[in-house]
Length: 441
Image 1 (cartoon, rainbow, N blue to C red):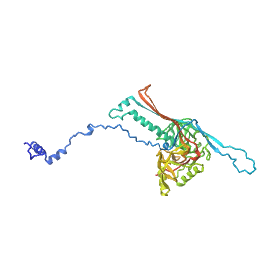
Image 2: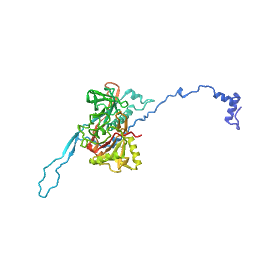
Image 3: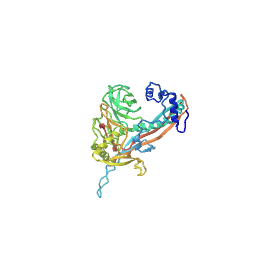
Image 4: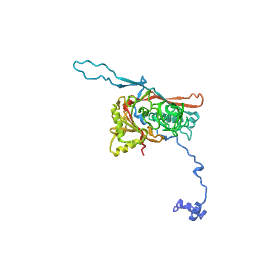
């Protein structure tokens, strides 16, 4: 049979098939064929997953507080002076009166050395070669450079907002004791806590596990459950929580030591070395507009003018819900990073659009220090009322990158990001903190 003008090719093929196998198009036969337990070729027989070179970072790399602060050159000095007393001889004088005795101002000195921050990494020459083959991530060294750069600045931001105090939740020696919140102590930091049999001791941190809270340290004595831990000094940059503190507070846990900052040894409330702290003696309570108002007022009474409310994402939502229900949010405004005692001009797009309370922007940072209980249970984020005119990142050495391909001991390309800087607060008394806050549900 051959196709004709009236027979399509499809019809021709069908007829040819029927001639060879009359049951080929029988519905019953087809149903039986498709129900048979055949072994078709599966993707699992030959397919192996391959992944593109693009790496998507699943970590929170926001560096919000770092971005909110102005960066200034370190300068020729390591410290600054605070005038803490007026000339008290100002008075009225009669027409023929005798001039009063001369008096003078009182000055106090604060010193702060720059802190070195390093982020080392390495890539083997084999990894660098194979990373460009099928299934690799492209340029492994470039990928690790980019990730390490991100980690370098992220760690710096976390350092700026770490907790200044913690509490022992499991007694024990180094490597056994647990201190919460987990991870707020960094290698090289020094803290104080009352130990078993040895009283108040200063320990140097080796590690503080960010998940379990287990701390390893050098020093005498074992830590005791329920005792507070307070920062004595930082190897890395000082935290805003260290700065906004005062002596004599009742913290979660039994404490016999205060939080220190810079080279200050006494931080009596109401003096130049102490900030305004609104706590609740270690007992958590809800945030309220009354607390926020009192903190703002305390900064203004000390001569400051708050221009930033810094807190965590949780408390930013809590404040938003609280204030919205009371119709006290004043819309949105722009917080502008300060340059010296000035600020960026409108129109330069150098700020952040933020919700405000009483004209003060509410700024959130996911790394912010949190409140906690004596049992080490985390509460809500602290709330800081700041006058950022007196806050700055003093940079002695800008972040730099160094690389070593000398292969002295192994075939590894070594890289290093490093910087030298410190967080300065030139007027501590004009800063405030609200702590001992419940978590926001």
